[in-house]
Image (tube, rainbow, N blue to C red; front, top):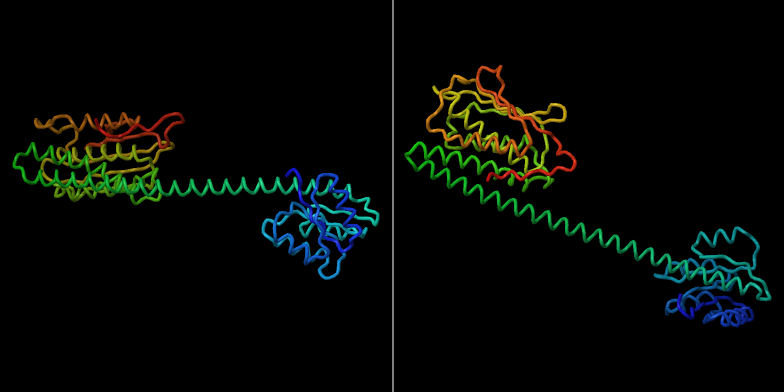
Length: 362
């Protein structure tokens, strides 16, 4: 409240208006008088009025009509409605119409001290309401700014994933070209393996670029795209019977990379060693077991009867072990299967307090 608030008293009774002016001026108010509703509205439009005392019965616009028009003014001052009527219905009507308070006046001006209290209360109430509205506006503005920043961040993250995915795909393509251009089997195998590992990571970034949620990847769609990349690879002519059976499962990107690398290594291992005499079926399955996710890679090949390849460096097995450790997973061989069946199990949700370990190979 200012040091000397201004009250506009709208009443066609000049004598009562003078009583109000004398009484409230002594109490620290600056009081102005308007003889009718139209004059009062014109003065309010000029600004500088802190509170209005408004009489009910006036020629021309009556008090309720004037109150309605005051409330339509932007940032209108609060109104204390004043009437000589004892009818409580008028009070209810005035308060519903937006009056801050209501007083019954008398012809001797004895209501003036009550008008002072009501005016001061109306000003305080208006100040509180204004502060509340400003605070709410600031909250909304902060939310809007946060939403804009979040949207901008999402766009940037999508662009980063798009660029990273493209760059990795270029690297995978270069490895593919290099593998096709060499005549040395060991070099070709090494380059093809490297290409598959790069492609596994690239697929995650491509998934994130097109995903509705940058915090998760649909694992079944990711594995389908990864296996399609393998079918198109240098070893693709030996993967005509590579198939996927998968449930729709969402998972965080870091663990998706680790799973993709493991699947890539185990599928490539089956391609190389499971069927010495030609291509055979390789099955990849994705599903859930209680709170766990289960990934299995199965072939119907030679199984434990396979002879060790002297060209093998053991790199694939080391990569599988490293990625399984990052997933806190169990990778087990099914001893009851005639060929080779590797089953990977890990928790669907990251335990509280734990963090997903970055799944990039050292």
